Length: 189
Image (spheres, helix red, strand yellow):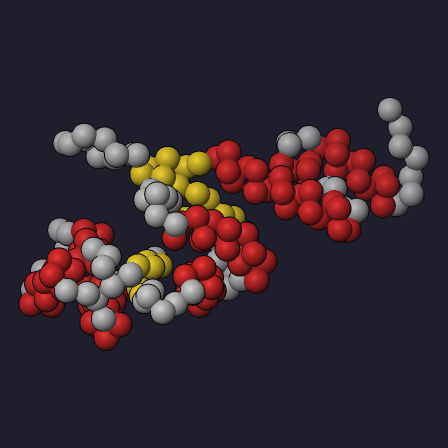
């Protein structure tokens, strides 16, 4: 889990990842106080990250953007650093997309898909419902599909390989057509 925020972000909310099993003690109280009355420092954030990783048996990476950072470049850098190579799937939650961080990440991840060699990128959105019902997570299929099409177009344009369209459009005849053009076979009707 990669979380990117500012010194003013509500870092204490990360305790809700597993609120039943996370013992809220002195460090949580300190983080809560910093979150609501001060600004998060990198030193405190790393202490909070260590605590969350240890107590949740998870791999959580917390990154702090400060006012001196060029945000788009730093977000790309943080994602590049945080995503392990050969990860099967990457999920990007754009629930708070009114903030620009998820938008920058959404444009960064297609590039990182090739640099980090991950197979699938899925965009998610948490649609808020009134309590007591939990908010559902929506998997945004259309942006993911459009990104796959963009990759196929780029591949076809730059290499002539249009085989990826067979998978995306679920049309096996495209794969057969590509094979015939690559092997200089006659294309039949």
